Image (cartoon, rainbow, N blue to C red; front, side):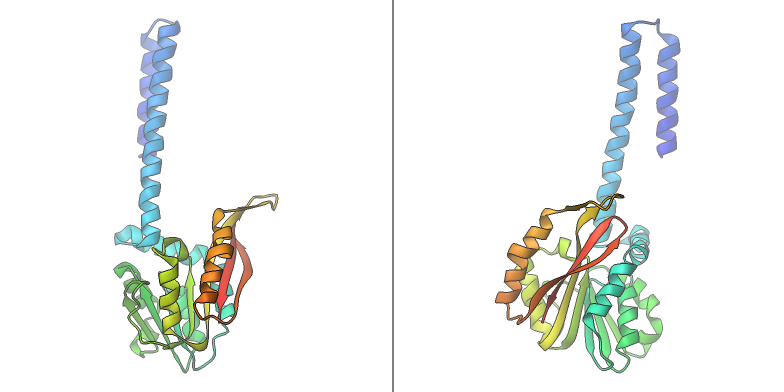
Length: 251
């Protein structure tokens, strides 16, 4: 697509340059031709970005599958770090909300070998991908994966020892409602870890924080404290590509 647009643009620019007498009018035609195609290319880029962003929220079709596999590769540092924060024990009942292609589920199942790992995701494509990635554990019923919403989790009260969710916070419709639902299914004394990115770091190591960091500190953490979490803290995580990671931990 990009090569075709570039070829057509260059051809029209060349035609205008060679067909018109040199002067202000010819220069204006060439300028308008270039600008028109640049504008169309920018629109196409924005359109494709919108589609790709939607695939990160709720992957579907072949593009959704590709997005899921990309996230597995890109989020390895945060996923491993989140598992360390959870401190999963052999017999723990573990939940991952928004498990994507299932790499976090796989790591959790390798730790809770005498327990069970469950997951809920909004995307049918991700349920299928994660089921394939964890096929043996799924057959043994050590891993159970279902489609569902984070605002109405299909689980019993106080069912899980550990709950994790990685890079889903950006898509929560109402954080207070989601936090209440996560607290509902967490056992007393259990641990919740919410991992997300809150800024960027350039090649010189300079960090630029997003407004999201302030929202976490002034709104989300107080909500967690009001929601019966006895201990609420924020941990600084690994830098993944150019992004800085944090985790909210509630116990």
